[in-house]
Image (cartoon, rainbow over all chains, first blue to last red; front, side):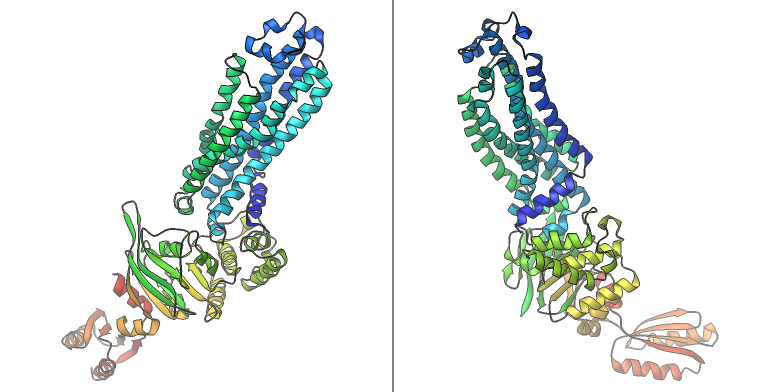
Length: 263
Length: 307
């Protein structure tokens, strides 16, 4: 069996025994999937949005509405704010899993027998990274699938549905999401290689979500709006950033440091 | 042919020099005892050989391959850490077959068969399907040895392999190591000198990161260990003291210790000195209760060199 996959399976068996990790993996996607659906439910009829028009929208956003009615544009605007939060899932979950997986092994010293086997540092690191990233990406995609079904049922019109599930958001969820997960895993590996407490590692690594929160508030305040070009640039930028972060994480993840700086 | 070669190995941790120019050759198929007081650098040496640490300077080779974290030499090595830690939720058989066997590149069937074989070898049959979290230190030590042997390594690096074991467990593990002689090169660190004396072919003594003695066990005993004669008299302490004083002038007597009517004489190691001492005791005109010519011990060599 592939050695990386053996590490992945072992890590899953281990970290999901931790109730805190399990809670984080389950709770965050539930909340972030429910929020936009609740907003959709609350604005499911035109009477709920009576009195709103495209003119009430920030100017930059109204331009994105094209042929949509005022009510449709408002629903699209409100819901799309929360869709950005979907991308928090592939960042937050790997941070929690990787922190507990790497620092947890350091504190219990269980990594020494594993490192003594002929597993390479790359195989080990890849195993730990995949064990953290795969659940995050899968849960994000599942959450988005639930949201997509809910959108069809609860949106004001097929127009809104089409805009909420257009290639912009599909690209954001299916391409940018995994790239964000890789960035989060790389940062967590770097922090975990130095930290000796999983909670400290998790808190420090969570700083990786700051740029995403900045984008969220930037969009809410009308500083800029997420469009296809921006998502495309985010994807390209993340490929570059991820390459650098992965190289740095592999360099910092030293067997000896992990074994000798465990306490 | 030397299976393990170490040349000029230095390892510095901050202000501490754990290894200070260690040079060492270990021949193929021997059981090598690596002795030294706490902090001498034994574990550091073993970690470097296992590819778990990098030397600050110097180099080591196993079967001609330079050791290191990414070296192919790691495939030739089985390593038992001093205090092996395992995933407490795993079961022993699962740990060996699924994790270790897989990471050693074995097929599932091969890993299962080898795991079963190892479980029997280290005597964990009854506990193979118990969670490791409930294992005693001795059981973890045996599981660690099973792990080290999983890959059929030609070189076995054992850091204090029998520490924490009960007498029966210790005997079993020592017998097991003894049986590996010739099949694998065993490099074991220990502070239990009687174990080294029992199973090791060659001995290296490390102190402050430097090798202070290296030889076959017999040569080392011959060279450094000094014979001691202990005599108990049934006589007045003053008379015994008077006789003991006369010994101090003899050229082959290294030391004389007096305790009431008992005398302990350290000799220079020549056979003639032992014969002469026997004659002197009988000619002392004192009633001898016991006469014991103590066999040189590795402990004496160790203490003599380290102190």
